[in-house]
Image (cartoon, rainbow, N blue to C red; front, side):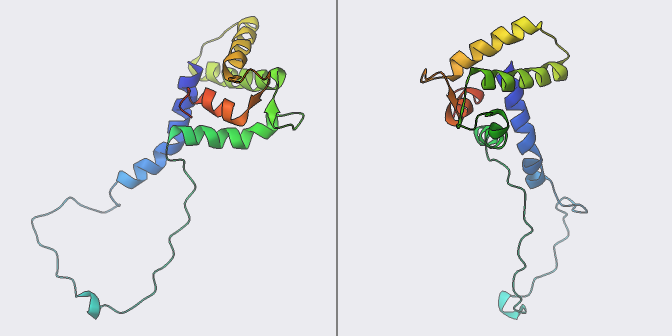
Length: 148
């Protein structure tokens, strides 16, 4: 359920950019039977430098990239000792915060002991190399459902 929530959040981040690409410009009308006015040949057009495109926010092209972006930006806040790894307590703090967000969004609740048990199981699953800590790549792979 948590992975579904995170995946949905990642899709929500990328959806506006996709929607912008597929929407017609305002004032555009569907193709009409009236032919358009002929365009002058390229050689008759005055040479003007192309204007630079407006910068766009970097939007990950797929959900795994969205998860990686979130992990990159949020990891330092949960890596309390700054060692580049999440120990079980650091990992649990992050997962409990995410689980709380999920429960608020879905209106569901779990007793604190069940959330704690869930976080312990999540740590065991995320710690793929069994090093007793979770690295950024392990966390990305875990949150992406193993697709990372």
